Length: 272
Image (cartoon, rainbow, N blue to C red):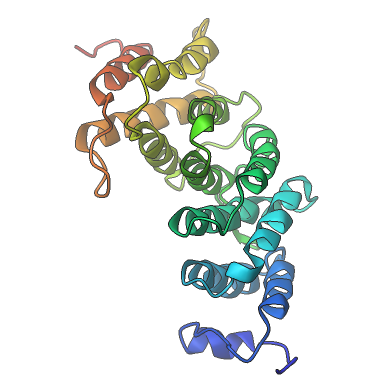
C-alpha cells in the first residue's frame, strides 16, 4: 500500500474520488491537519469537501470515531477556523452514525456533545466570513451540528433547543447576522421540533430563554444579539408555516409559532 501523501489539487480537480491506494489512517491524519489550516482553499475547498463526501460514502468508517474525537478536541483550539470547522465535521460523523447504526457509539456522541454544548453558546467570534480566512460561520455550523446531535442523542433534544436559544441571545455577541445565520438556526430548530414524541410543552419551553433575555429591554439602539434573535424568530416562523422539504411541518408548529409571534410583538407592536 502506498504511503505517499494525497495530492489534493489533483483529487479536487477530479471531483474527489476516494484514493483507495492510501490508508484510511493516512487520510484521517491529513484531513485532520488540513482542517485547522488558515488557508480556506486547504481547509474548506479541499479538506472539508473531501471529508464530507468520503464520510457520507462510508470510506472513513474505520476512523470515524477518531475524526469525531479530534473535532471535539478543537472546541478549545486557539484559532477560530479550527473551532468553527469542528462542528461541521461532527455533523458529518453523527449523520453517518445515524445512517449506519454501530459506526458511532452513543458514549462517543455524548463525549462530543459535552464539548460542543460548552462551546456553542460561549463562542465570541461569530463572524460569518473573513476576507483572509474565508468562511468561519460559528453560528451556522454549530446549528448544523445541533440538529445532528438531536438525531444521535434524542434524550438531549430539549437541551439542544435551549442551547440554540442561548446562542441567539448571547449578550456578548457584537456581530449582527449577515450570512443567513438566522435561517440556519431556524432550520436546526425545525429539525429538532420535527421529532414526533416531543410534547407541546417540550416544543415551546425553550422560548422562555428568549423571552427572559428580552425582558426589560427599553428605548435606545437595539443591540446586535437582539437583532439576531428577532431575525431568527422571523425565520423560524416561516419555517414553521412552510415546513421543510424533507420532513414537512413539525407536529407542534401552530403552538410554537404562536409563542414566537407573541415574542415578536415586542419589537413589532403593530402586528395583529
